Length: 89
Image (cartoon, rainbow, N blue to C red; front, side, top):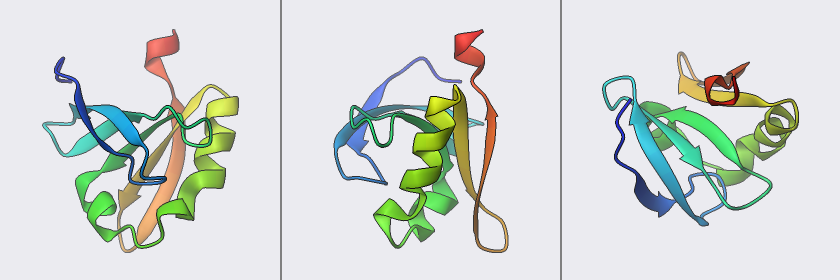
């Protein structure tokens, strides 16, 4: 994971958010100030294919409540799964 922090519009809500690259810059781990989004990870392919910004808002909100990270990726269509947030351990 890169230590450099970047800023850009959150792909889910368009609020200015911070992110770091992961997986050889194939994924972004976002930290969005919007409480509906919070912390989530998305592959660059999934981010490009995301049509409706709010498509995963409910899932990311639930994952954050459970101290998990929603991972959004593209594999035969957009998909999402939860994983443990290693930064909290």
